[in-house]
Structure formats: structure tokens, C-alpha cells
Image (cartoon, rainbow, N blue to C red; front, side, top):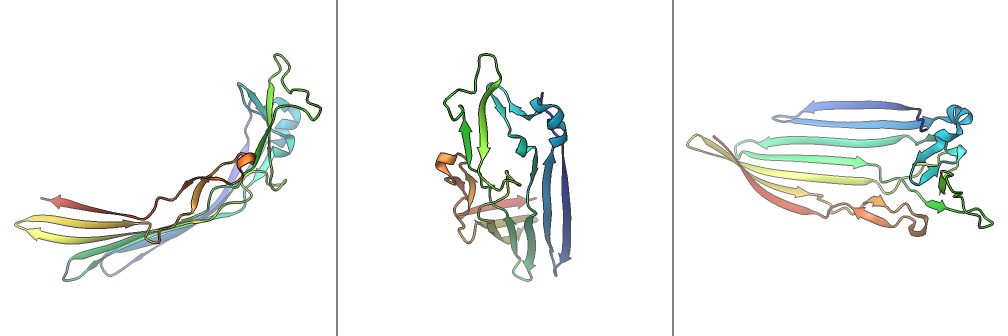
Length: 207
């Protein structure tokens, strides 16, 4: 039996401003997530089984988890340079890094007795080494900040409108970690980072 009960608190604020010829938008998001099924777990202990085959038991002190307040910043804008018909646009994002976890799987008791007894469901017991009051997602890695730019030249000929675009992604060549190994034996070992800076050239024709 698996029972989940939780709530989410959030506050979203967005603003928009208009430049001379093109719109610019910016905004931020602040939120936190709280999960609490302690009352249910106290009456129905088997609700702490988080997975089956093999089954995974969640320690009772994990019945209440709460993330800190997390903030994301995002914005984009575009501007067409008069007379030369050059479009300049930018997109920026700043989000929190991946949650820091250190999970240790325990398959036997301190005296060596295995946790698995025939048909008994218990096989492993994961333990998270972190803030005991916030055992999951209480700490996060380096923030991911990325700026992308686009330069487009408008060309008009015989009723045909074409745009030659030059895109530059990850302008500052950031290398923030986007995913980490949660295994205690490889604590905080990166498994994925931001894509390196790269450029792309393209054309769009309207007729």
C-alpha cells in the first residue's frame, strides 16, 4: 500500500515591459514543496513502502520533508535596430542546481542479519545523509545561469522576406553541474553538466 499526502506553497510574480519596437519580458518564481504523511504512516506503517520488487522502506522520520524556498529568474527580450533591419534578441535563465543527496543502501542489520526473510517484503533501506529535518532537497548545487543571444538580418527582395540568423548559446560558456550521482560511494560526482557554448546559423524565408 502506498499513500502520498502533501502540499505545495508557491508565489509567482512576472512583469512585462515594452521597448521601442519589440517586447521584453522578465519574471521570477519562488516556491517550496512540503510533503507530510506522518499521521497516515503512524496508523498504516506499510504506507512507507516506496517501491516494490524489491521493496524499499522509508524511515519514519522521512514522513515529513520540506524544501527551502527556491527562486528562479527568467527573462527574454528583442529589439529591431532601425534602418539596418537587424534583430537582436536575448534569453536569460537562472535556476537552482540539482539537489545534493548522499544515499546509502543498507541490506542487513549491524550484526549481519539480512533484512530479507523469505516472503518478507523488506529488501533495502535507503538513508539520506543530510539535514535530518529536511532529508531531501535541503541543499542544492551551483546555480545554473545561461544567456543565449540571436542576431538576425532582415532581407527583402521581390516580395520575399528572409531572415538570416546567428544564434549563440551559453554565451559565458558556463559549466554548472545539472545532475549529480546520489550514491554515497560517489558523493556529488557530476554525471551531467551544461552544454558548452556553441553557435548556429540558419535562415527563414517568408513568401
